[in-house]
Amino acid sequence: MTLASHALRSSLAGVIALTALAAAPGAAQSVPVSPAPVASLAPRLDSLMRRYMDGAHIPGLTYGIVRDGRVEHVGTFGVQELDAKRPVTPATLFRIASMSKAFTALAILKLRDDGKLSLDALAESYVPELRGWKYPTADSPRLRVRDLLSHVGGFVTDDPWGDRMTVLPEADFTRMLRDGVPFTRAPGIAHEYSNFGYALLGRIVTNVSGQPYKDYIEQHIMRPLGMMDTGYDITVSPAERRALGYRWENNAWLREPDMIHGAFGAMGGVQTTAVDYAKWVSFLLAGWPPRDGAEVGPARRASVRELSQGLNFPQRTRRPGTSTPVCWQAWTYGMGMRVATDCDAGLTLAHGGGYPGYGSFLLLLPEHGIGLFAFANRTYAGPSGALWDIAMELQKAGWLTGRALPVSAALAQTHRAAQAMFAARSIEPGRAQLASNFLMDRSAANWAAEFTRLANLAGTCSANALLLATGALSGTFSWSCERGTLSGNLLLAPTSPPTIQALRLGFVAR
Image (cartoon, rainbow, N blue to C red; front, side, top):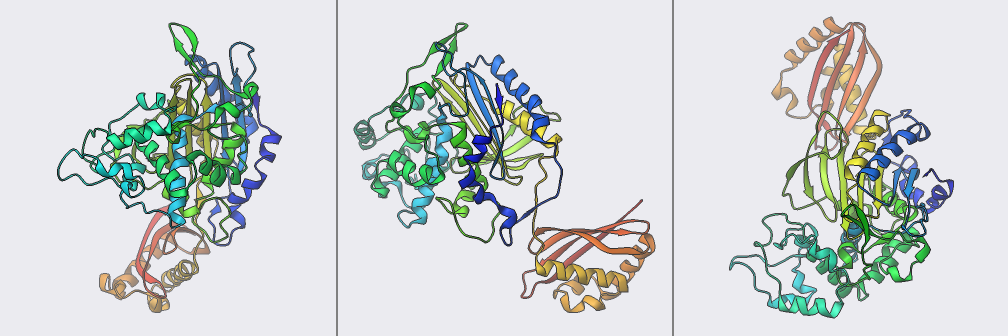
C-alpha cells in the first residue's frame, strides 16, 4: 500500500513555517524549476523500496520524502506484526535505533546555547564518576564533551553490544562509570563509533538539565515540534500501532524481545512514526540556509547546522545504492550525523539505525531542502541503498536543483561596474570600485587590450546578464553576446565598501 497523505501534510502545518524560506528577507531563493510531480514518480520510487524490502526479508516498512517543510510522499508496505497482520500505516510506531543520536546531540547543543555547559569542558565536569578514570597513556587528553559528540573519545566500537544495553538501569550505569571502562586508544586521535559515548552524553543531559534524559528531550525538543507520538518509553505507546521487531534467521522470522528505556536510550531508544518524524526532518532542513528572521524552533538554526561539524577525521566510502557512475564520498562524523560531500547531491547529512528488531536510515540534502527516511521492523535492516537510489531518481526528475543564493547589493553593483568596463574597453568606468591589488596584478593597458580582444570575438553583448552568487562577495556571470557567451567570475575584497580584487573572463563561441 502506498500513501501521499493529505492528513500527514496537514499535521506539518506548524512546522512548515520553519521552512518558508522564500518569504524570509535575505533568504536563499529556490532556482525556478519544474521538477516532475511526485505522483508521476511514486510508482517507480515505491517499486525500488518494495524490491529492497522483499529481498531483505522485512515484514513491514515505511519511507517518506520531505521537501521544504512539505511531505511529498509516504510509502507504506507490509505488516506491523505477523500474527494479526495489521498493515503498516504512516502512524505505525517504529524504533529508529541510532537515528536517535541526533536528538541527543541537539540537546547538548541546546544546553550549550542556554549557557549550561561547554563543548570543550571535560566530561568529568558534568559526570563526577569519570574523575577517577585511568586513561590508556600518561599523555592522553581527558575526555571533552565534544569528543563524545563526534565519536573520538577513544572507546571501542560497540555494535552490537551497545544495542542490547538499552535497558541498563541508571544505577547500574552509574556503577559502570564509577568503575571506569577500558579505552581502545587515547582520546582525540581517531573516529570510532561508540554507543557508550552517547549513553554518557545522555547522562550529561540529565545532570546538566536537572531532568531525566528522556523527559528533557521529549519536553524541550519533541513536543515543541508537535511530535506527540514520539518518545522513549514503549510501554506507554498503543500496542495496536506498534511495529513489532523481528530478525530473519534460518529462513524464518523470529520475534526479538522488546527493550524498555534505560541508560543507553540516548544512543538508540527513540520510537516514532512517519507522521512525527517528518516534522523532525522538516525542522532539521529548516536550519539551511543561514538567513535573517525569527527563530521559531526548539533550537537555534545555527545549532542545527552545527550538527554537520565534526572533528575532521575524514574517510572515503562508495555511495550506497546502485547508481552509476560510481560516486566516492568523503565523509566525517559530525554531531549525531554522518556528513559527506556527494558527487550529485553536494552536502549530505545521514545516519543509519540498526537495532534488534529494527533498521532505519535518514538522508538529508540540505542544499536542496530535501529529506528522505525509512523505518523497517527487521534486525539491522539497512535501507540506505534504497533511499540513495530514490534520491538519484529525484535528481533525474529535476528535484536536486539547489537554492540560488541572494545577490548582495555589493555584488550587483560591482558586476555592473565590470559590464561598464567591458563596454568601454577600459577600466576607467569602474576604477573607483577596484581593490588596491587589481591594477598591481594586471595593468590598465593590459586590461584594455583584453577587453578589446574579447569584444572582437564576442560582438555586441546584451545588457541582460545572468549573475549567480556563490557568496555575498563572489559570483559567476554569463553575458549573451552576438557570437556566443562571455562568462566569468567576480571576487570582491573584504574592504568597506567591497571592491573588485579579481575579475576573470572567458568566451565560448556558438
